[in-house]
Length: 323
Ligand SMILES: *Cc1c(COP(=O)(O)O)cnc(C)c1O
Ligand code: SF4
Image 1: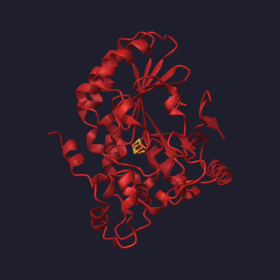
Image 2: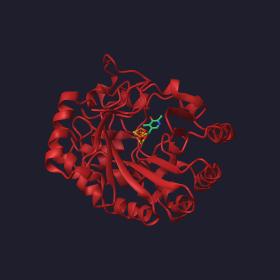
Image 3: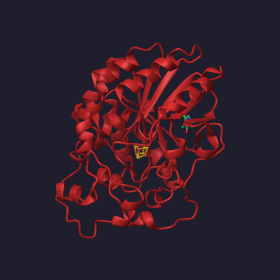
């Protein structure tokens, strides 16, 4: 078996084990009921970057179930960004001009507690193998589509062969020029970025873009830097999108360090998202006035190219709303 599959199989799924690995007393820190709604999953690699003995570690906070998830909050719902209305075919969301997004799988290497798709009906909506021909025909039949986004869940949990076949089929569609991958895998499971995987993207006529998803500078370590370097050498344009999260990255120094650290690994900041209001995530929300203040502070301290665009996704809008 590939090393990354072994690592995935060894991920923490029991929060008690994760806390014991981190030498944190589980009393009071655990919220088993919350874990029932949305299972815990944390790779060893990601857990290895958390500080031992620190129950407030910003990486831990992103993945540890909290009792706050069970509180009802007005405005927080299961389909916060209108994805169900945007499904043009099974597994295909067509919201914006020129781009379609494929929901390739419901699986992720790490389950993020703030996830906007934590209530997404993957069983009925993910792109199964049998649904692929319909989706490819849809894309082939609409010449306005120039870019296909592989999303999920996490598309890089698909096997190399499935990804290779999908990319090859897309490359045959003449009006496509770019392929984009949205993935947290380079950060949470860097061993997945194998030469075979990189070859699938490097060998296509489509221009490859990868939007990684990192929220805190501590998420970047040497193994992540090496995975990103492999992608970069293969000609993949690397961008980062982060979510503004209370108790994780809601201060200007952390956000500046996030941009700087990942720029050092060849990644440009793309979006800083306000939280999508998915059920169970209200305790992560940062208010819009506070977000604007933080963004203003970032602009004061960083060169323009290291300042991400502050956006919010609003159902029914033709693009992400710039704040
Ligand atoms: C966010 C998103 C995109 C990509 O939007 P960009 O502004 O190009 O990054 C495309 N399709 C869907 C359904 C999205 O949610
Ligand atoms: S990796 Fe992305 S899709 Fe998966 S749980 Fe985290 S935020 Fe959600």
